[in-house]
Amino acid sequence: MKSQWFTQKALKATMIGCFSLASVAATNTAIAHGTITSPASRIWNCKQEGPETLSSAACIAAKNESGTQQFYDWNGIRQGNAGGNHTSVVPNGELCSGGDPNTFGGMDLARNDWVATPVNGNQTFTWYNSAAHATAYYRYYITKPGYNPQQPLGWDDLELLTETPPEAAEFYPSHTVSLPSRSGRHVVYAVWQRSDSPEAFYACVDVMFSGGPNSSSSSSTSSSSSSSSSSSSSTDPNTCVGVANWDSSAVYTQGDQVRYNNTRYEAKWWTRGDTPTEHDGQWEVWINQGSCSGS
Image (cartoon, rainbow, N blue to C red; front, side, top):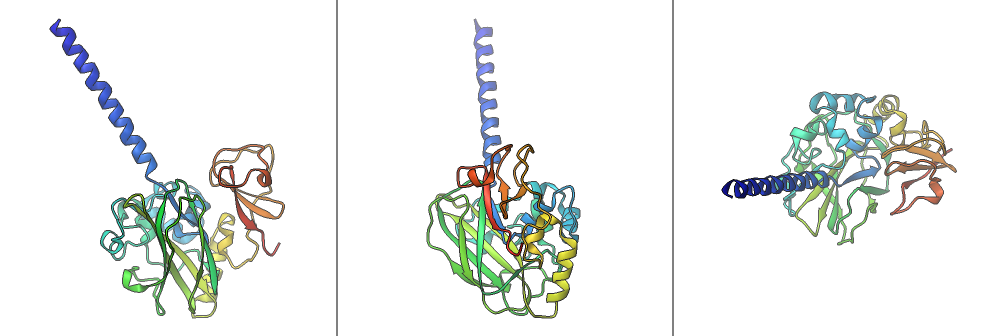
């Protein structure tokens, strides 16, 4: 009788342990949530080049620094207990890794050859949040005049551009931000603070303003070193350069991009035969990334 009792207890303990492990695994899977995809954030650019087929010098250096897993975890630059105290949980020199250099340290490399998007005046920033949450605010900063991209990025290098009001949960929120006068290479730093949790997410977007000593050289470097998948960050106004036409018989998975009716689309999950114009939207497989301007 005692033996049977102990056996039942052991079985129950084993089952509880299995459920606990499953819960932890599910929690760890769910912690990654989003980044800016237009203009492409630093990690999104590398992810689009392909974790195993990187072509730009900066992304290759990032891989050498921290490996390829950071690119697969592109939506996980975060701090779980930020609670609005971003300068406390994200130290100077670790802004682009969101204070997690062990995972995303390659993003913190101080270089002047990160693929950069040409900008001027008003700029719309679009997020792809793979898990949507109620939002306290999105904050956008930009580096101050005289910023040196070859020095580690710190909070004192930034000035606040705008903070949005609270928002409902959205998968693809976008915000139009008025950019100040700048020249050459700069970084737009963005913070997404949830309102239903202390968790916050961080993104570095490399941008290029016309004029300045490194404007032309950096633009040409970006254009020649970036792959076709990051063509939106080159100086060519056609955002579909190198993007293949949609094929109804082809299989597409998360992150794959296609061209259809002079528009660029990105897949959110596995798909085959779903026409982009008929299956784009919040609950559909395709993300409309905008017209192939200039084509």
